[in-house]
Amino acid sequence: MTVDFDVNGSRRNVLRAAAAGLAALSLGSHAQSGWPTKPVTVVVPFPAGGGTDAFARPLSAQFAKLTGKQLIIDNRGGAGGTLGAGIASRAAPDGYTLFMGAVHHAIAPSMYPKLDYDIEKDFVPLALMANVPQVLVVNPKNIPGDFKSFLAQVSSKPGRFNYGSAGAGTSHHLAGELFKQQTKTFITHIPYRGAGPALQDLISGNVDMMFDGLGSSAGHIKGGRIKALMVSGLKRNPAFPDVPCAGELGLPDYTVTTWYGLWAPKGTPADVQARIVEELRRAAATDELKAIWASNGAEFGHLTPPQFGAFVGSEVKRWAMVVKASGAKLE
Image (cartoon, rainbow, N blue to C red; front, top):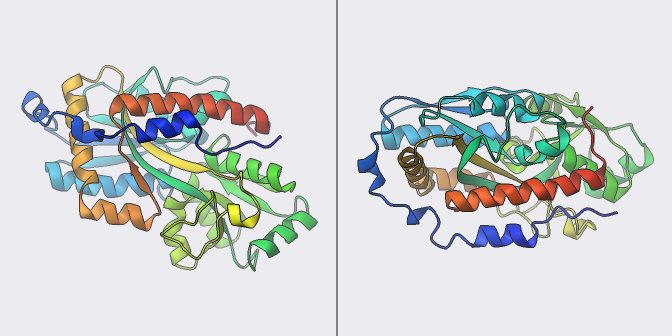
């Protein structure tokens, strides 16, 4: 059975529905809330160096410029991003602890039999911060050549090569499982406590490849430390026009995207939520963040909070079907 990771109709409609986007929020909310009066902490549920971190840190710098208050990144890696999510869900709902999660948190309910949080019930959705395609990257010393050569090698030597991921149940893991399913190959999965540590082992040659979000791999690809063989989807990414897409390599159904979003603990006052979203909208409009997002092959997701919440709900359902069809399990 072929699993289509492409955006389904409802997801596409949600993304297109934001005609007014965040701009529709009342700028008068500033007068209703004094937030922020002190530094704000963002729990990032992966170690430094991963995709979530790659978008959280530039956001933090821009936030400080706009508000005069620090946005402190608190990396809490482990259990495929679920450890940090649980910590953030129990934080005081006062607007001073936020959570920056990702597509992994829509996958987790189908992969982990017991979670100490519910991404839809224990958080309030604020913003879809970035959408990036998945990319197949390799250590060029371990796997030289182009995609055709790579596929010939992994096809002829089942189990000889391995791929790192940000943890069991993450999009990196399932992207690898889907690739194996569609190419009828076997590559050993090596889970890490985040994309950052996995990338470091890929660069050093301890693992052979990754199916990574382009946001965390972009700098290493440009620096020549790793090589991109394929970007998922049916079109090339503008930031890496020389990297072929899956469609032109004979994998038209291999469309995997990674998205990153921001939440607050349930119970955060509505006026504080509005202020947070206002500042996110202001940050997204700056030339600095636009340039960083573009260099990482990413797009902002201009959704209102209710639209983002609906999007997350649709993703939880979609990934449940993917997990079931792929047979992916915790290791």
